[in-house]
Length: 427
Image (tube, rainbow, N blue to C red; front, side, top):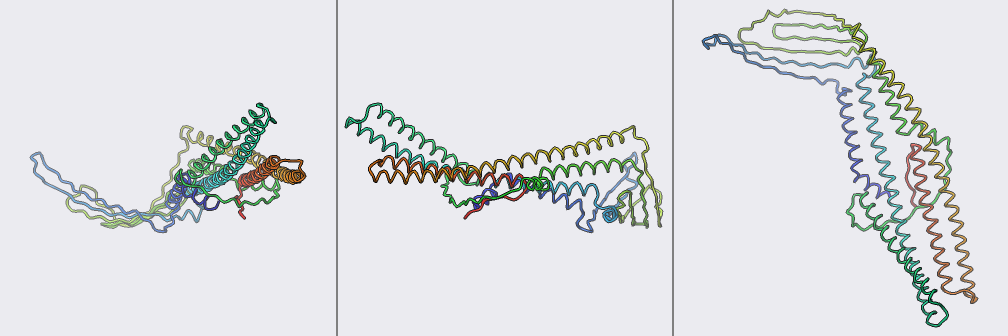
């Protein structure tokens, strides 16, 4: 089973896409979060300009080249915490991680189901073949009795009908097995005609779960709940940005300008990240511009939009509505998650009851076989009766094994619904 799961995870395009999405999200986070303390932008500008008079005689030209380097230090992170952009990309990373986890869980559960479907189909075919062998024996016995005059034509027709039904059962079981092989190979990324040899080593172990604890686990760990809470966080971040945009923006700048170089610092509310810029230039030729002023300079700028035609108020209104919607979505998701856990819990209870019932049926079939064998020894039962009882034991045993398979899947479904890791035990 574990090998099959590994193959399915490696072959799944959905898992590969989810991993790519996570890699992109982490790359975006790395860019925004500025993990490198120094990550400057370097810019080079160069130009040549020439002028002519009306006689196409060149009378002046100018050549200029400049180099600038600029960067910013995220001082606002230490003063005010992560920025809105950092918060959003961090949430995108978490969302991508959850999506990858959900995709992997889906592949694992499908692989478990496909694995068990193959085992069921294999054993169903074995049962169908034994039933066919029995009906074939009964048909031959009936035909012999008809020749001896101790059976009627009607008895032979009934035996023929039962034999035909058993043959159809074998064909149906064979077709179901081929389909299960194809689906299993497709899921594990193998060629459709690859032989499938699976080992049935599952063991039944009854587990006890507390419904309230499973619901509490789901409300804490389920991806749907976490995503809804992150969506609420995004809505609140957007609301904070809208409210912040309505406040005045203060910019403080300063620096020094030389004849052919300059250096400057600037910071702006509300983040107060410290930006810096350094540059130099070389000019040759006549420059029609005022002579640059050299020396130190300091500046203070305040920008505020007290009235924007109501746009800001409408954006604030929309942002508050979105926050309220996300809060309602959380409550709705919590209700749906609790319901899904309750349903999975009830399904597990029913699966456990089915295991117990089929165990009882198996014991009854085994006891009946013992009685039939004793009766045959005393001359009160035939070999045909023993074969029918033996087939009934096989049917009861398969019913019990299938019930155990269903219990394993039901337990995995409950743990998955509760946001817990799940798998199967092999022994």
